[in-house]
Image (cartoon, rainbow over all chains, first blue to last red; front, side):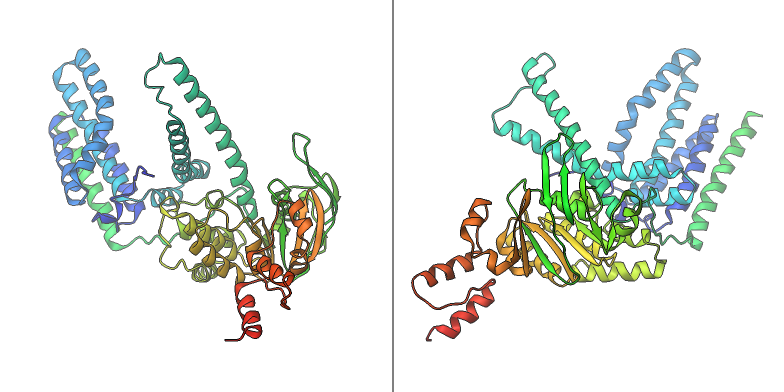
Length: 241
Length: 265
């Protein structure tokens, strides 16, 4: 079965070796700064930085574009609606601002395996419940899609071809009962997983060991990116005054 | 287990008048048709379910909701579907899950995980993600996760179902060297014959119990419970019927050595 692989490029990347905490701190800091920028010039500088970092990261450009394309409708909506209120320049600035943030976050998520992001977030005091939910989601989304794919294949093996459009009543009925079935199966699996958790000494808390080490390179990366962002922010405020 | 009765939520009877005991160091096979209550029996023994009547004792102590958490620590249970059992996003973290919960320190955890991965032949799989593993590999990860907890008794629910022949052989080898006390629930009599010394035939209640060789002689009882004797045993039984003086083998190796003794080259 084919899966969506969100971690596909993580280990090829030149930023992979960085401590995920360093990446999270530095990139989130930059994202906040970019969100605060008002003038076009500093925004363009940040965009250049974002693009430069992505080029350095060895992630295939196609992959970056695919990710960016998902965000495109949202950021177009934001900037177009701004265009009607305040004109072309602020709207363009908004477009650049959100694009830069999205690109920076793509950098973070494509160069860090998902599980490492969670572990690092735990160190950075993100609530555990959220992390555990994310972890189970990440683990079981594949099992879930596989289960649905199996049902779909079983369906088409018995000559089902409906459900292509919303008016196909019989097809929709079949699909909706399949969805219900999926829900029941997920519920049953949930119970079995809970049993398995209990068998392995689960007491309400997921504990993990991490081998995260903050090295000199991580400090350097963090410091550089944060200094650069601060500088851009300074320029931004200076230009305004 | 004494006189255990268990009903499912919808009131269907799962187990009735089940009394059995398993001693330390024993290797026991629970045989029975589909729906005989094998899985339920294992869950009762692991303290995941509690009987409606009767009582289950574990290591001499009566299992109740209060002490189940503690007693469960020494019981390893392998579930049928490895996807239910591997819940961490990486193999290493999954195997480490149990030992961390048992309160071992970091160094001990690393040691236990490494040993477990070695026994199951999974060295080099540490950073793999479960959804990229084959079914057989998942099964091995699930076992590694249990072995890392050093259980005193291992409960296996249909361990070989859905495995290809090679995966089955590998798994059997791992299971054989994994734990002193084993309870294996299966309807695969060939597997049961290879691993267990004692057999219990279960069909809502205990139908028969005893040395596994003797159980396989009772063809009528096996048939009534949708079971069958292992192929080797059947072959030798029909040879005996045609007048050959042969003792009954359980494994192919037994069969070969018995034949070598009796047959001229």
